[in-house]
Length: 131
Image (cartoon, rainbow, N blue to C red; front, side):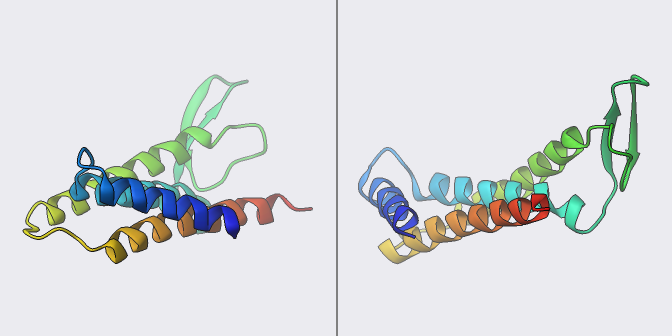
């Protein structure tokens, strides 16, 4: 809890006081991180098809689930990259039309949403690995 508050204050302080970081970029990166985290988790949670690689058979295939040996990590990464591009690109397009500078509260909310999403996804995968 203390770490997340310190990280959020550091992110907000850096983004709002630094002239080199544009608000558009800050919110675009926050959205891309949130999109990556959510779309990385989505195929496992919703049992959606993703790409698997079977090292013994040396073949790629698309399925919702597979036996223990094939690796589904590549498919998860592809879903995560797609989510980051969709969310980050969408927010960058929306914030390109902003004429006024966002408030400190907007920066804080962007950082809080990003850190909260990361914590939820890490908690989900930790819980699923529990025996």
